[in-house]
Length: 138
Image (tube, rainbow, N blue to C red; front, side, top):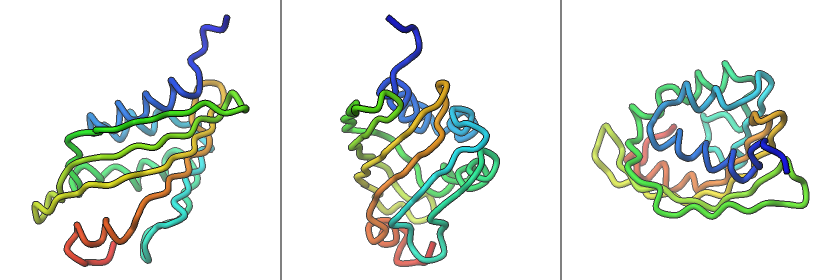
């Protein structure tokens, strides 16, 4: 029996870190060469980010934009590949600048290597995001 955390455990830990709004700690869970993909990113937002530092630069201001207060549902699934986990999860929060509710559901595919995140692909609805921002662009 391995003492290395499973991909499911590692992915669950990313949600815990995200909820406490520590984007530095979140990116510290990533390999230097991590690739983050957001296939449904709205115009003006990156669909692909390469490297831990670039990902931190992208995420560091997130808690100033969106105040996530709760992750009411998390379902994490193992796959045939022991390094890959898939999650369906949702958040409840609000937009800091206007107080609008921010309630989003996500599907996330995560690949780990040596206990670190190497690929993070997240699907979410940009229309919900932009409406919460007040119709503004990203």
